[in-house]
Image (cartoon, rainbow, N blue to C red):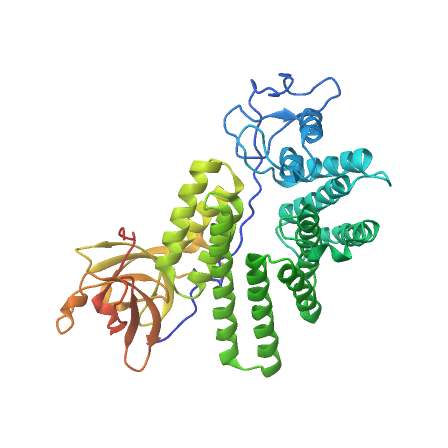
Length: 457
């Protein structure tokens, strides 16, 4: 039995597909603030990049900015969520803005905050508003850029350094060195916690995301120390997982040992799992951040041959995103595209051990319809359809299967599992079962049927 690479699976993660999608503006769409249609007096076109659907949610950028300014002026001291909310979330669907619209609004927020609250003798809460606006712009640029190592992120470094300088200057101006020792319920302590945890540690975390090697770890450790100082336990846990993954990677590179590569994969997957669970606790399953991290976790699961859990998770996330954010939202599009990829079933066809994609069964499972052979890169137009006897197929690693026709282990018949290993010497597939508590088993490929559709739990 030959363990061949699977062209339907690319390393530990599925390839990321472009998520941008041009949306046409309906002819009868109008700005929901001024009720003006496409193009106002100054030539500003309608914009929308949120979770609104149909004709709702369209607005002129100046109208959005003016609305946000009015909401900001109404926000009281210390009410930073109300100050930032109109700049980052759509008032109509209550979901986040995205892409260039998010950057444009965050930039306008920063300009407004600096002009309104950035004077030298401003109050401590006015200083905080400017700091919050700068953080919002940094976050918008990061969120709008898929690749955190892309050159387009380089201009954000001065913004991060400016944020750190602003925090240090505020600490000095307000003589905040003793505020950490104030009672936990006091305004001074809460202000210190916010300034350090929400802004200073955030800046170090963002720098860590952009850098590499030991410098990345150093910045994450700085963020962790601040989070620990102000008692932000969830953020401490997140930094701990990131640092542990990076440390494992560094040790593996130094040792150059094959077994360390598996350790890296496992530690990374465990870190992503913890981040996903943390995000579910803090933001809820319907947040875009939770869905995005959940999709990353599903990719890691599939790369580790936990395909059943991965497919079920992506199915759940796609359903949530479609209901909350709509079918045209970039998060929904990505989830659906991943689900389509996860539903592909790869097999090895004997005796040539070439890769094919299984499509369906005929003759009560005795014959499998496949397409291939598959090459890298895949050339679908050159593939052909074949009818292959089931005993000439070997399910690929991670392929969901159902046991069939077993005699001595008849209790396994009908059980759903996935192939994790191929035992070449014993000509068996190591099947790990979906049902909790069941032990794995070595099964002949002839006694396995591909599960093209996963049954409900």
